[in-house]
Length: 478
Length: 104
Image 1 (cartoon, chains in turn green, blue):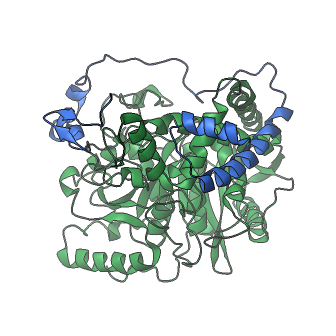
Image 2 (tube, chains in turn red, yellow; image 1 turned 90 degrees about the vertical axis):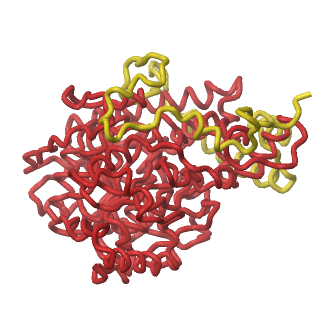
């Protein structure tokens, strides 16, 4: 397996190298704006510096808490918030020796697919700055693709790790729901989201996931597949290796129906099928009839949960408060109205509406029942195949402000990624080609706790096509 | 969506909408709700709602802030007494009270 982490491990012990590193990052940042905050030294005291990820720098999406850094969620309303504590997933990586170097750009509260909904300005795609990096973990994807960090954390509520990973030509893992603690992840849609990993190499993605997964007494929705991982400390869940399974002659499910893919993605899907056949696996056509209901069900549930989760931002205990109000209620209204961006307001309005008395059965409860139907579809599919191969998104990276991909079309396009969040199953996106200078990615979905098979298969695929270097990517500065 | 409905919803969501916003959001909300209505075609008879993909029961812990502390690695124990750190985040504090505009 490719593993380039040795390149990074002396960055904190070699001052000259660190200086060259900072210069490399600053040069890129003028073009891509992937970081909202960057300071490689600040969290050194919080890292053990020894362990599975000893001395390896990484970046964290700015909706995940890291003590001593801000926690803006890409929103004006939290512009001045500094996190007094660290998310469990991050803490485990620090205990394994890794070092947080900064917080990455994102769509406000994770709501978006282009990183254009960041209150602090969009991030750009390092392959071509006129293109979006994807979202909502756009900054994390751009930073990894440009070689600013070997890996970054993101959050995936409906595809927010996998889609930007595909847009930037890297790997993106959305773990099984509950397998990684959400403690310290700012809540958007609690029943759907999880912290995931973006990396340029499969081996790195796997090592990071192995260190950060596991039970957490601070997140009561955490689950693990077997008791040996059922520990109650924040220490890494056990560096107990995820053993590569004997993955020969797997049955790979594929969809054979019109899916509205743009030509580059359509041809990428065919390429990925050829790749798995070349590895000795067989293709099995499967049907996913609930696919067309994924997006309405997903957005009903996500906006409903968002309207409840974002009710806490009222400007009273923390965050940026409106200065003009003359009574508490006015204070809350003025703070929220000035502090939230358009997409957040839209989703809060939608979520409030679908939860209003009289509408719940029509929307929220129905969406949750459709969610059950989607899970049943997956149960059926995984009784006949080992993994499911699907597109990540109907398009490759699109232009900033694209007319074809307006905010509504961006939502409709979440159907391939949203399935995994509704069903709770793990999924990984991987690069398959570069078409006219733009990377194209596909994704593999596995049954609950099927991360092993995803790592094994993507590392096999990596021998045929590894993460392509974007123009300007370099490690010569080392 | 009717204007009145939108304003009631905004009221419940503690949001003030300018006229331009009301126009913009009214259209966007209607477009998405129409899309949500496609769910009506699904037969959901006999389907239980899914709220969590895996959890079977609620897990409880003692309502005590230090419950986890003793299980942490000594040299990296988290600061569980976040009271001061959290108060520091408040926009306006006098002594240990958070100041807000007059209620009455």
